[in-house]
Length: 142
Image 1 (spheres, one colour):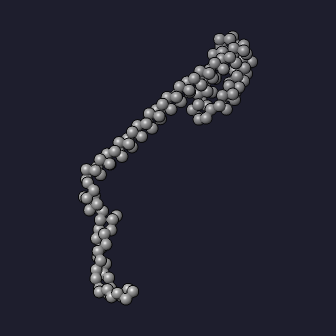
Image 2: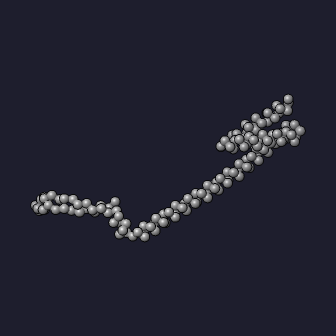
Image 3: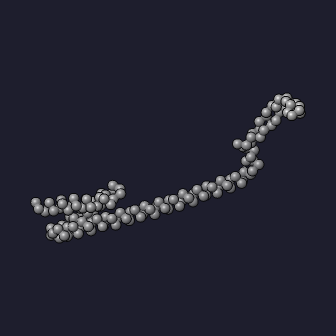
């Protein structure tokens, strides 16, 4: 009965010490499992002594944190590689767009965006000058 109390107390202590540093649920779970595994291993190897049990919990937590560090650094490298690839793709798209604009040519590109609008001008007098009715053509660039 005393052994179960020691194991339970050690597992609760491991859960309380490793949960504070974790930032995501998977990290909390892996730290608790690592600490609990260390508690059980330390308790078994140390012949039910308290010090080996506590040292086992610490070793299990360190092993779990080393594993989490490896996972986090791999994720950071993958993110950095993806970011660089996206930057490269963006530059390539911009370059291809510039090449396409040059290939089409300025005259053809302007003709596609220009429309002509006929505006009737009424008969009028401005500063003593008489203007006959006429039409004006406006070029509209879109």
